[in-house]
Amino acid sequence: MILKPAPADTGVIFSLSTKSGRQVVVPEPGKVVGTGLATTLGTAGAKVSTVEHLLAALVGLEIDNVLVEVNGEEIPILDGSASVYVYLINSAGIRVLDRPREVAKIKRTLVFEQDGKRVVAKPFNGLKIDYRINFPHPQIGTQNFSFESTPLTFSHRIARARTFGFMKDVEWLQKNGLALGGSLENAVVFDDYGVVNPEGLRFADEMVRHKILDFMGDIAVGSHRIWGHFEVSCSGHDFNNKFMRYLFDNQSEFLDFVALEDIASRPKCPDPVLVPVGVPAWA
Image (cartoon, rainbow, N blue to C red; front, side):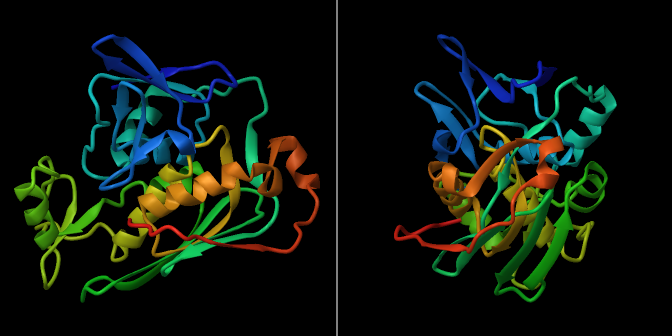
């Protein structure tokens, strides 16, 4: 995988190597073709999986324009977090362009929920995420974390949080030909009692921090960076994408596309809208 600079207003573009040559995939909610163990983007004849950690790093470092050249069908998982991407991008350097950043700003409160999963999006001048998880495991249980994104806070508080899973699930997946690259080198693994990884956790609440990382990557599949305050409970890749599809299908009602210097004068938001979702969602 190679990251290349791109001109202003390019956005994030994936250039994928296929048998017929390179194909371009632009992250959009409707281009998400898989949400099982990770988020997969694709078009006819080309797809790339595990995009969420890279996209989260781009959002967290406030990078708007980049060409991502990929040979293969998967973004490198590395250590299961976004920390290596943050290090390499900062080492390469980030260029400030001569155009104001345009963002998609939440302009009225949206409540999107189903079967215990919930995303509440509110107007906010920036990106703020309050996340809650609840797993029936003695070392996880209920965890809450509040985070307002800047390149510094993202790098120190979110980027290092690794993906996590359970030994019983890993064994079943690998018996069925899935998650074959999964190991203690790129995930936090729990047995029935605690963490299997000999080094332990990077944060006591690493799991909810990683869920924020995933959410940041999953909401990056839009034409613009999203600004808003998101209150998220027990969501996952599939429900995140359902939320994004609804948001962009109804963008005239819920989004303002504005340059940064215009944001301070945006009008006060109207009353919230509750959206029930009728299709089962799995994360």
